[in-house]
Image (cartoon, rainbow, N blue to C red; front, side):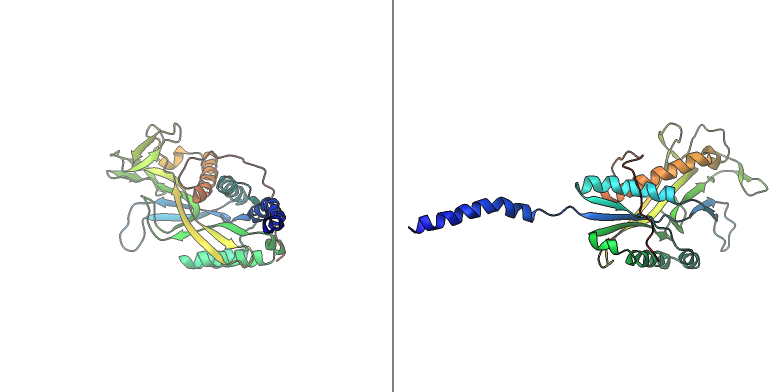
Length: 293
């Protein structure tokens, strides 16, 4: 009798098990993606040491339309998260650094720059009520570093181009301070031939670089869940080029395309690690309008 009474209950439990399993299936994550490469590229060029406290580099900033680079970063993040979290929904956000924040960053140094930019982004996100429907936010923001890394100059940050035209031996300069001729010696650093893709070792090169933080924010509270720094550069040098100045080996348009590729690849690898990734358009990106400020 006891068994007969319990059997309908067991049957009900068995029938409800599939429903319970469905209820326990985690909901796909909703992830907002935002990139703020900035509206300036850094151009840093090595020059002959002059002694004293003057550093052996010339530095300048070149204004750019940053959205093309921002979209390249978003493509890289989108592709990586599609592989990392299948089924997740990614939402693209458009954001530009406010002029007052950019001015404050220009007057600041080191890590203070990073915090000023993050604070401005969080202020922007607070004005977006739709973030209550998101699980987290992945942000790529420039990182500033005083360290010299793998043959690159120190005090680099964000995205830019570093030119190293000098090598050991005899170096002659023109009236503008640019290299007019120099000796050739054994290479020191891994380089890539921009025409063939072959790798080599040269001591002079032109290198697009991208130094950034991938910051994960809780969408509801905007608390920082993680912060991962990423440092990438590609040193280009054509040993067969007729150009005396290594900076002349890459036309400006070609260099910008390589910066776009670097931005996409670096963003992808910040999620998936140092693996190969094909750059180029993924799915269409249509960022929403900026939130009211």
